[in-house]
Length: 282
Ligand SMILES: Nc1ncnc2c1ncn2[C@@H]1O[C@H](COP(=O)(O)OP(=O)(O)OP(=O)(O)O)[C@@H](O)[C@H]1O
Ligand SMILES: [Mg+2]
Image 1 (tube, protein in one colour):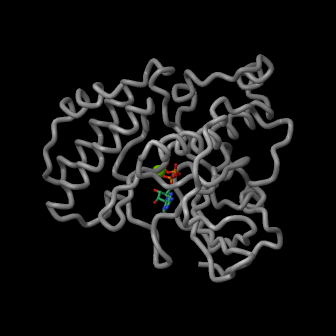
Image 2 (cartoon, rainbow, N blue to C red):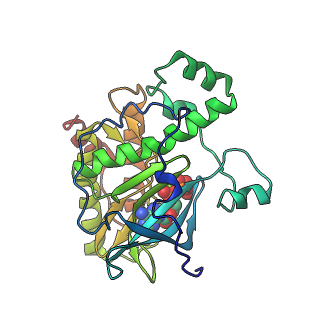
């Protein structure tokens, strides 16, 4: 990990006020969420402790936030930097603070049901002008934050989403200074823990379905295991069940994928039974 380098400015870049070119976020007018106690309030200094992980679409850096009023008060945060969509020269990527470009998945299907309100914006997106691309990128970031706020407030065990802006998203870090929580796929679970993890998965899926959201990319790599607790992460592609005609298909696929992983580990659970159970919560 890199040396701790405090930012000179108390406010990190991603908390600067949005400019005119920012898209409207249909879902940002959400009820106020009470911030968790552990989150260091303003004024604070953020220090980048280096890259934690690089995924298909994002790079995760570890951030230490220290109170400017009380230097003994600190917390660790994960900063998700969305990778640029086109391959860029290495120098450009470095300037953007990331190490590689995105291996991008199908945007259009996921975005169905989340249209832009302004005609001008819709036109820019379909013509994929520079402005249109930026609209998509920002909406993606804001979308993940908004969905996680809703689900966290509904009681889902997901990292608390702290703030977002442009191509960055700050969220609660799951892990400690020695390392990040492992993916469920890599965690070593005994039989009792495996059964418990499945129950936690079911509970989480109930919360999400009852809140009207489908994860859309659920796998043992988008679940973390930390001190016997299962954490749901990685929501940029989450789908609104009411608005997206494909929503139930994605829910079914998520359930099948998750059950298949548990079955491989020796815990047989019928995906159709779980799916039917979830439908009751729609
Ligand atoms: N809040 C967090 N605390 C600890 N580790 C995290 C956190 N968020 C993400 N990670 C780690 O970083 C990895 C990449 O994050 P995430 O899955 O959100 O991004 P991604 O690039 O969309 O991933 P994918 O490879 O699934 O497409 C995760 O698989 C996880 O290991
Ligand atoms: Mg992921």
